Structure formats: C-alpha cells, structure tokens
Amino acid sequence: MPIIEINKKESQIKKDPNLIRQEMLKKEATLSAVLAHPRGLDKIAATLTNPVRMYLDYVSISRKLVVVEPIPEGQIAYFDYDIPEFYGVKVGADGTSRFIICRAERVQIDPFEIFSKAKVPFKELRIRKYRVFDRMKERLKQAMALREDLLWFSLFHSAANVYNQEIIESGNITKDGLAKAFEMVERHRLIVSGVVLSPTSVLGIRTWQRDYIDEVARIEIRRTGYLGNIFGASFYVTNMIKPVVENGNNIVYLYVVTAPEFLGWYPIYEDAAIVPADRGDDGLLGLTCYQLCGMIVHNARGVARVKTIITP
Image 1 (cartoon, rainbow, N blue to C red):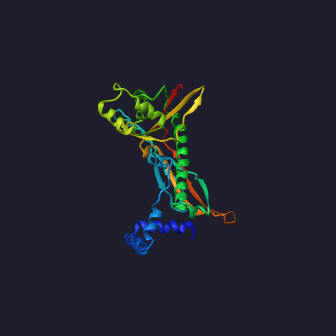
Image 2: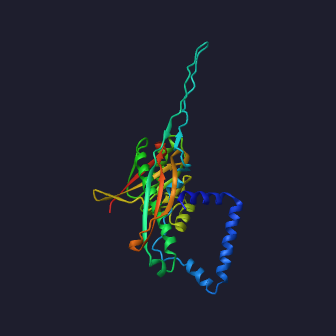
Image 3: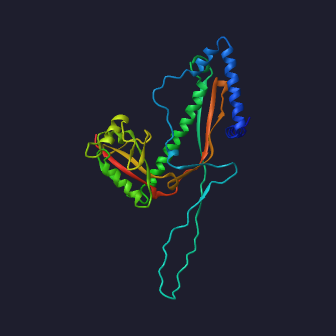
C-alpha cells in the first residue's frame, strides 16, 4: 500500500471516534488472544523489553518555538504579512488629510527535503531482546528532529544580527547579559517567550550567587539543576548548540526568542514519512525516513543572541 494511503487512513482513524473505538477493540481482542496462549506472557514481556540506553532520546525543540503548519497535498505554502502600521495626521481647520493605500506582502516558501536511511541485518530481529525494527523507526524520527533543530538554530543565528545587536559577555552567562538580550527583543514591542541555550550556558546559571537571584530561584536551581523560567520566559536546553573554538577560547551562543506567531513559520508537506528500503541481496532490512518542509524566520526582530567568551 502506498505511504500516502497509509497516512490518510491513520489520519481518518485519529479523527473518527467510531474508528478509534474499533481499533481499540481490535487491540483488546489481539491482547486477549495472546494471553490465552501458553507462552503469551513471555511474548508480551519480550515486546516490552527496552534496550540499555546510553543517553536520553532526543526531542525536537524548534517545533515549540515556531508555528508548525501541515500543508495539504497540492497546496502551496505561503503567508501574507500584516498591513504595515502608520500614524494618523493632524490637520488644521478646513485642511485636507493624506490617505494611505494599504497593501500586504505575500511570501511563498520553497520546500526542501530531508532524508535519513537506516539498515539492520536480518539476524538482529531474532537475537535481540527488544524489537529492533520498531526501535529503528524511532531512531529515524530522532534523526529528522536533530537535523531540523540544527537548521532552525542556524536560522536563529543569522536572523539575530539583522535588527538586534549581539550581546557579548566574558565568562559565563550573567543575569545582566540576559536582561540586555531581552531588551533587544522587547524594544520592538514583542514579548520574549523562550531562551535556547546549551548545557555550557546552564553551567553559568548554576553558579549564580545570591546577588543575582532570590531564595525561591535558588531552591529551583538546587532542585532542577537550572532556572526553568526567568523574566516570564521558558528555558530550552539542547546539546545541539555546541561551543566553537576561536583564538583558544570557547565561544558559546544563547538565543532569546519571541512567541512563535511572531517569530517563524514551519510549513510541512510530509512529516517524517517512513517507507521500506530493503536490500535483500545483502541480508539487510531497511527503512527510509522522508520529510518535505520549508523554514523561515519571518521576523528577525524577534530573536537576539548572546555570545559568551569562556577562557579555558
């Protein structure tokens, strides 16, 4: 069955309450049949076995910072800017006021593709305690999330220097540096809703003294490891923002962003569709993850960056 038809069927099931109930009844019947088998519990236990993980699975951050919009088949991804604001004019008695022609600009986004391919030997399906094929699907989707975050962070980095001045700090991030970055965004009549930073920047927050934060904030840092909210903005920590070495110093960037509707747009034509890509002659079972999307930071005023220079 083509992947398009599968996706349509899944979307119909998610929307129709009757179809959702039928799917639940099918799953319950399957579970009852498995439990009735003498080795049913062993089979269920095998499917629930998880691999030994080295670190947490990656979760996309960029989708929380921009507006994500699915684009139907055959449609074009575009948006219309708001009508530019203008001032009223004071005129004298019997005077004639000027008029303004209001035109909005339309922007069309050209889509691009993201691919991720993975193969697993046939024997892995039989010798592993967990479902290797299902885990491979999860890894493929994580690969897409990693790539899209890297692309969005590069857009934030470029857009942050268009209207707003870069804040430079020597050493770890300080509350004063954050306040200056917030001011860069708020001077454009925008509200800061998020701060994207690396674990290296979190280290600086953990070392803040009592002159920087109050007792409640210090308790939160001791409990969670970092200040989850400051000045009304949420903090998003990602290891995809990596230090850059310049002149023997570590350069770490931090990004302050406004609300999604004022920052960026993420039209998605096909979202992480997984299709078979086997290589039977080589004894490999494969999958390909495909995504067709577009990205744009339509308001560079809504992002500012802080550059911290850390001497080793």
